[in-house]
Image (tube, rainbow, N blue to C red; front, side, top):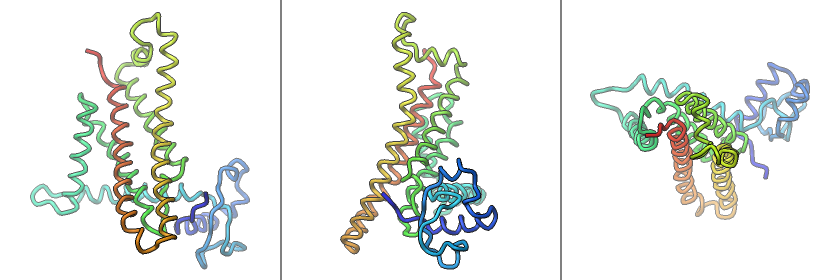
Length: 265
């Protein structure tokens, strides 16, 4: 299903065309991975490309993901620099509420030395939440409504929790977790356990994509039918879904990290 592109899609690709030249000059392997997008920004379109569809250097979900990343990279440190120990501001209270909530999630699922995983859990939560919330602005698009973005997040989580498990137990000790209670059953148990381990990346990506894409599509379609009545309750539900899906992804990430790093007693 075709979705409208964000306003940043046109601006960023127009800038890239001025720097890198027409996208037709890109290598074939690059052009094959680019999706077609709409270009409706007056005065921004490259020469010969008025309003219509064209191939940009970057697809819209990449542009939006980079935009959210820059928001986190710029405003995160600025917010941290402005923290006060005495009388915290309203924004500081809100951020501390989220951080304490994430600490509770980590403590529940990673009992031993879990505090060191707060940065990765916070990165997942805030990045995904902001990506999801982009869908509430008519000139933006949620990058998490694209499978490429959700798979990038799930693969990052998959690599991280397996690397954490290897670091905690060593490669041999970590692989032993997938062999079952006895060596006699290892031949049968190991492939099943490894398949389940890889399936975590698939389930994380598909769950996030399905919920955000479905909610964003349904809201747009209902808004076309009843533009005054539907948007407010649908948007309220969408805000709840945006934070819920960020929480679910972060919760599962901490569960997987906790399982990978746990020591038998």
